[in-house]
Image 1 (cartoon, rainbow, N blue to C red):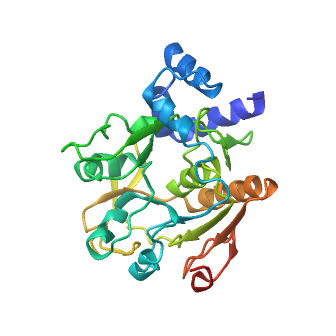
Image 2: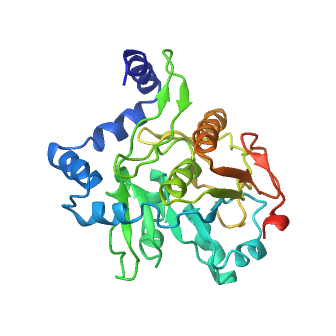
Length: 292
């Protein structure tokens, strides 16, 4: 990291103290840093690192779908994804009573979601991948012992200009760590690349949130709103009035998406937005009915 990056990161942290708290809570001890470094060269000392290493190029050459939870997501589209490599997040499991499909990998980066829905998330019988700062909330085995595999990745910082403005980041190496970004979709794109997927389709990644005017105080989570019933997701019960949620950073999200596209296209990976409705402009659009 150069001096400009360091100064930019300090300025960003001063404006976003919750991000600084996350960083301080997940700084690597020497022992953990040593285990991670050794795992990168094939010397595995911990089960978590062994699993992470095994994911490298697991789906080499295949296509995959990174699924958002926007209002345009259709249950019938999810059913058509049986047998595909899929990454999904947060409360996607609200669709499970209505579909046989299940995601290949389940992720979450949001501390409020992790706090509020820990029991539901821990009990999912899915392969789950979380940033390390969620370990205090999300257990490895699940509350009933049927919670599937859980693995944690080290969170690494984004990139900033000298004034502390976010400029995105993309990591292709899980052993080094992943940038969680302002949206879980960015984590999922890094996972897809690390696992060897070479064509990536976004589905249900709509953008354009309607944000409540009500605010709550959550110093660990940043600026937090309280739902007044606005609908931003595919399921009517996804968020109910009174629920607190982190306000989406839509400008930063587009910057993060642009960084993802630049990284992937340089390495010959195709990435397309197949969402039925979307305001996300960083990726070329494609008709999901053509894809499926």
